[in-house]
Length: 176
Image (cartoon, rainbow, N blue to C red; front, side):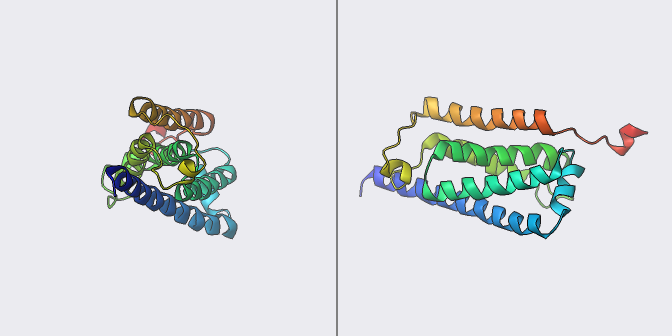
């Protein structure tokens, strides 16, 4: 096997792992969304407007982009969507709790890692063993183009989403 084959295998392992993990999160969220308004209420407590829409948005994004990553289809877009989910979670919920995931309230270690790795992997391409490669879909996998493009879509999507839907709740100390 060639270095290109091994690189394709490595990218495939990373892509399938991240896609499967995101799909599993989406499946868990699907059960939660269907069981009642708890998840929607939680999103609203974070300052996200229209909690029901946000609960479905996150659920469907995780399910769809997770499945797309496992299959290796439209990989840069899929990684950018996954990165944006992590960035939104980082800003709206985890940043205030410090770095470590085991901090009270859960720190940003996990969601930031997901976002950073998704951007880096999006810049590397889907690998040789993907639907993108099978269907001969061309993307700018020159790292000088693909990496900034994946980052721009992820960060741009996050900024647009937060600008449209997030109104951070006022802290109790600031309200006094």
